Image (cartoon, rainbow, N blue to C red; front, side):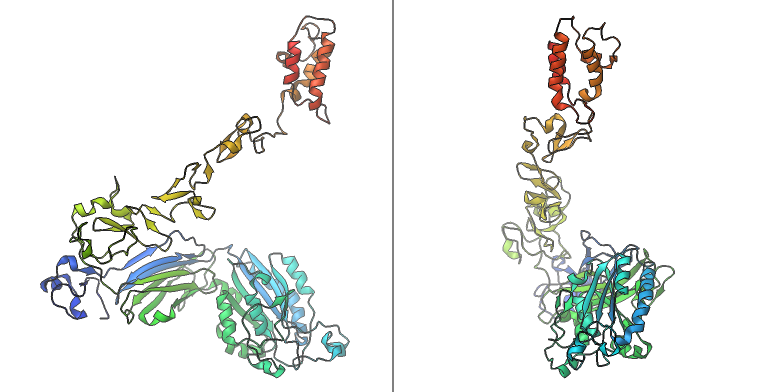
Length: 640
């Protein structure tokens, strides 16, 4: 059987009368009924497409899709790709600094900066890095005479750098001035033979992620500049180096230490590492070397930087072991002003979206006939994001009719759930005629769907769906491990249970993610008051009523104006001229309510003034003499 129409139904093997071949088990409903197959034994070849909206994306959406297919069926999916204007781009210059590159290196000191500035037209978040290479520093690639090792240009009375396999000079930076200074400081080196070690250096620049500083979210470009071809795998045998390259990073103090120990990488190995680390390579070479690099990397060589940043195309990969059982087609839907190509669009501007209509079909089931799960990856070329499509193939029929199942005869259902409700989920395409009594126990009070919409009712019990995000369980599939807010990396902060999308917190905790203690003990100041009486306790911390106050208990407020600061001059005037209304009449009256006047008693004013000064002096401002608190002084004065 190679094709199943949308109107066809299946019947399980061994049902509906005498056993027959596959051609008699898949047919139109009327034909199956004519052959004596009852409706409850029929199954639909239903196609399901589910999008996981919880996975966030920036340039590629959706990023997680699940589909269910049967042999002969297909599903259509739309994937959108948008290159954001401020999406980051990392550009790493890898430059050949052998002696023949002297003129090109001088040219780079001006053109390289201009090129980088031009790149900012395509990305508002451009970072640059720089590294240099020559060749393996061993004979016969370099002159190993002692006078030549440290200065290969000694015959020309020029000071050159020692030859090196790869030297990482500048990590990724957005500082254009620093990049310019780095370029201008570069000096040439020298070696003996014509080919250089460019591919060896490229592999190190690709795999030494931490040292180079490739940003995880950036579009990564590796620009190789040279005027010669590069050594290939097995070339190192001339130097007695026969150990194949291990594909790992070997940088110490930014110098490639494996250059004299391992062979040059093969083209396949280098290509694998570039793809693995999502790095797009561009070759800037002399005209006479164009054909050589075109042969080893035709796609990368022909692309210019501006085209690379304005082209959007996708590559689709199916797991190797299942590739023969599925087929995929891609049709791009290009925005206005762009041009369609094989599997993408060119001339796409930032913030424009390109839509890809992706059709996935299933040829056949595995030889063993069992259901299988297969992953298909859709990755825009040069992007670090991708869409993962998870295919679940349906190669077997479900267990049988549910209307014949009840609490007393569960044995008629293969795959009946156990006490933990973690059993397999039957095919939702099963045509059922269950009565209401069998589903009554599958609905929570007030609910209008069975099993909270996250399972199916089997034999009067909920069989909860299996989600790759976490477990779904509970009598009505109302509890799960993923749909509630997270706190500290755990659902409900590890202090509650997720029920119907909301956290039910343990005793002593509250909040959306159970992150707030109910107790206010942490908000009690030393005197026992709540937030010093100047705030409220929110989630175990004081929130001050006055924005000028701060501190763990709202106890600090340098900007607050106290009574003493506002009125000390006025009070001092009254104290200096007597406490009676008559004698202090020429003083400012704004502080009069704060001062208690008494009959003139000899010595009282002087005594009160001394008490006032004594009580307030510890709170005097060190610069202007203002008092920070007058209340205690006034109280004693009034009492006197």
